[in-house]
Image (cartoon, rainbow over all chains, first blue to last red; front, side):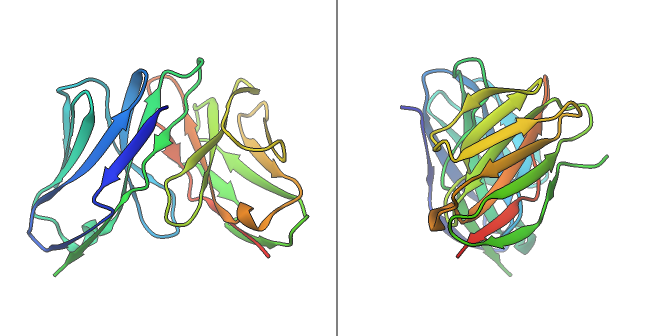
Length: 112
Length: 111
């Protein structure tokens, strides 16, 4: 069964304290892995798409990496405005259509 | 460029009633997908539509249905509402070479 597990469930950081979020996945075949940011009561905001093991992408203080079994979202010198829930999702090969399977997310709180 | 739009923003319904939620995709995107997000969980896939046909369906009962119109906008319909249908309903638009862009969601409360 296709599955995504994110850890930790919640993370509290001091401003400037770098850390990493983990996304472990099990899929029969991977079309793509996605990272989203979600603020309370709002829709997910797209961050990155990764397609193959070894791929890396960066945007401001965020860097996403991908292996055959997991992905990491590295946050360098975070600021309070980075506080949000970060969602990981996979798009497995599934009968000719796209079906994102999400993890439960990591709630990040960055304190000044 | 306008992003994905959804309406209404939020609504309150009573058990047993019916609800219709609407979504307009990003211009040029021909595929629309619907997701249900219960508080504290990640979104769960309900449907994907493109070229006005259902292309995939998640593990949801037949009370959930959808359609896509010639302008690629979409409606999600839920009949015989249950308390457990209370959630944030998200629409995502996509097309070849794009990612999945989510709208702001519709917050449905069933009492």
